[in-house]
Length: 502
Image (cartoon, rainbow, N blue to C red):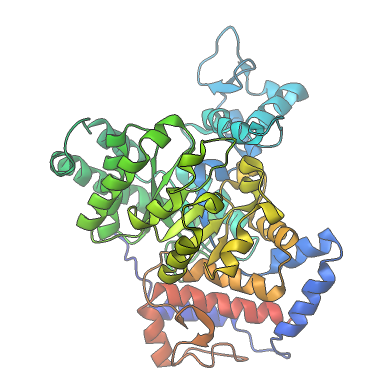
């Protein structure tokens, strides 16, 4: 099995060889701020500025929605699938209704029909049209990519991230997919949590073995596909990735229980998986009916699993999608009962009971909100003053910018920054804070490079980190070797230094 702690010397070699190139000129935040202000005048200039701007992390990314419809169409063409124009689905075998996938290259109408159905390239009217189309798009896209190894999809996502100076990603990926299916199938309904956990233990052990084999295969494939000197799950290269295991709230409750149990067991033995999540449409009747049970089961497993890292979709609601009573407590209970260290979306926070108290709780516990501008606009119609971005910021709740499902939304992290700049009138200092927040609130292990989340206060021993020509001292090398979080944060700081000295 590969070691999950990269030696500090590997990181140092990469940094010294690639990032820290002593040269004329000094990093100058004020000059970068002036360049940013000038770029605000026209979108192409702003896109170019933001693409080159170093971004700490994308913490909210579903692999299934991260790949563009054009890419999954290529997979369907390569595997010679058959397309049904009535359902927009691909099948492995032909029927009286299907046409060969190659026909989509010849008939524009069919190709556009699929691309529109499999992404937000096409839109539908009505207050819930974007929401419905968004979630429906996963079915046709999934039919085209079914059977494609996850590492191929991951390589596409990581290449795109590297083009945008993204330092770190936490991706919701199907780790141990087939073994997880077998595990959830073995979970019986109506069994008390302690008994169910005991019954599932052999299947959980089998899942952990299969999942680690998946992770090993992904490491090898991604290192080769991206031309890296080490797997991207290490912190020694230009980009780092870790994974989240995701339960789906529309599944039977015992399946959700089994998924969380498997995730926590895997996290205890393999640092490539750093957290667990709960996804799927929060407004689905099954999700609403089982909301409290999901959190109770999560609380049970969390307490017995060593208090692992959890991030939960919560508050991805509005009154077009769910009655008021469901908007009054989802975020708070996800934190208090579900032990979420981050909240995905958090859009309905204004309807929560005791909003000032909830915001104080989030600030005190440093619970971050994963803001996804494109999908919030698409699914919920939220942007600008309709979005709670400023409510959270005024309350001191940390925020991060993320893609959610960049392939479905036809976006990327650069565009998410652009949308945030336009919608919330961000300054260059705001951009740096949001970029740093991505790593500060990641689930990477180890102490932060900063004291108390204050980016003006670097940990003792790293006072020269932002100086021209900085090289880690032996003491700094040892400190970085003990903290993967600090290592990637230092990489971001040096990338920001390089960007600002241009």
